[in-house]
Image 1 (cartoon, rainbow, N blue to C red):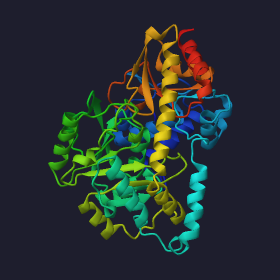
Image 2 (cartoon, helix red, strand yellow):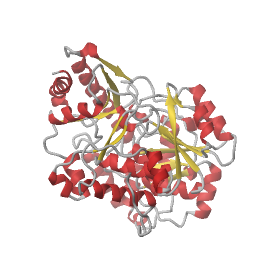
Image 3 (cartoon, rainbow, N blue to C red):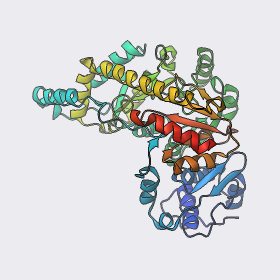
Image 4 (spheres, rainbow, N blue to C red):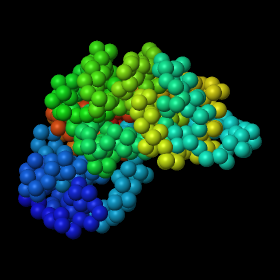
Length: 463
């Protein structure tokens, strides 16, 4: 059993210290490759710490590739070569995620340089610097400049059916920053419920802010309300219009159930992450949960990183009026983390109709890319051995495989073929993880490489 003393951990949180100790044992080969790690509960009991602390450490190690999980079996030490073992964390991440030998990336969500409207953006920025010099040099309000908040409110009204006032909107540099504000606003003494499976970074952000997290299982309609009620959670973080990674769209009946849960206590709120709703490729975008919230229980969050570029770190949240009043009273001393230049340029981009045009162009591009990818999959001889799931929900879909290969072997074989892939099982915490299902993100694929990439994928699994 792993044994560590926490007396000299310095300023590290418990989970950070445990993560560093296990990582050190892996790099120094005190833990052998493929050695099974203790279960979260047994290690927590042995070290006299919480299961959440162990879970946080294991999650970080899993995300960085130092350990891997076997569905229904547990966690194991990854086999690292000498170069990786002696490298820094930064070098390890670079070598695994940005390797030159990657032929096609089915995981990343990078923006294409040819898809960004550089000329239009540069023109609007020049006009902004010419016509708004005085406003550019005035310190932005904590929640963002009025012109951008007003433009966002109008955009939400026109395209998302949300009747919100600019005064309710807070602009920030990335959703991670806004999550931190929400935690300060709602309090660290509350339990935050997260979807299981789900996007791992969300739980890491919450845990780094030292708040308790509860992982709630999903069913075919979204978050399980019975499990949610049993969890005693106060805050629910969900993506009901396009769940990641399953692609599930929460139906209206379940949405009202969740709103009813939120209304059962003044301490309860729902954080709605509407991260890529603009790119639903069949029919109209799903109306957000916020649009049916009449009692002020939903905090709506979205970002321009998906619609414009992954490097444009401009996000926003819409707070219920009561929470906005609390924000103004307690947190308005913070400076807005987005520059005035970017805020005024984005406001002009939205007001001139360029955002709508850009979204329409990107929808057309992604639809063409998705159709090409699916057609390539259907052209394969082994196509009867796969099932495509949720291909209309957003920028990724699931590919279920009929194979006896374990998920780790699938990932390894694809990596040898120059393909970066991830399995659905990697995103599960406590719920039973389905195996043999790939998460296929096509937003970063080179259209000219799609056929070859699909050929490599199928050969990797059924060669």
